[in-house]
Length: 152
Image 1 (cartoon, one colour):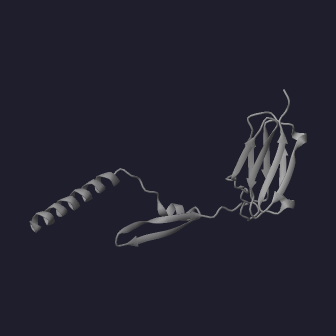
Image 2 (cartoon, rainbow, N blue to C red):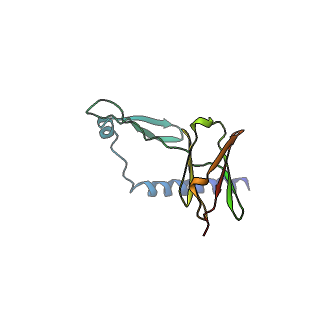
Image 3 (cartoon, rainbow, N blue to C red):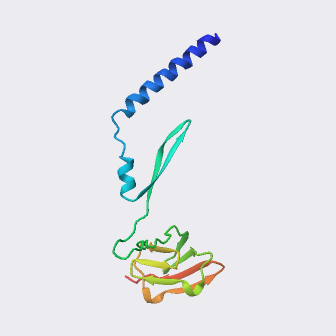
């Protein structure tokens, strides 16, 4: 019985190797030497079960010799709750770790936007609002916004 298991696994390994060989025969791998000449840093990987390479390139602006600045991406994964009554919206926004003086609030008839140096969130509301009626309060990392609905 043990021989049956051994034979099964030998056959399985033979089939796996055949399938992998067939799979990789049509794949064209990049010319590593050409990549290195084009400024890519190639780290070869050659261990018992892993073969390949990691390629990295540092982008440099040739004219000035500096790396271009990356565009700042602000986190828009801001948690908030909206409570609505007949006259107004009460919006509670989690801005833990932000300074009150760094919080900028913008409004339009359809939305409220909160921006800090690290975060940005635009919240669309289902009713039109009066942007002039906006009241804000920041306490314990939570920004509380009250804004009246526009009268129809």
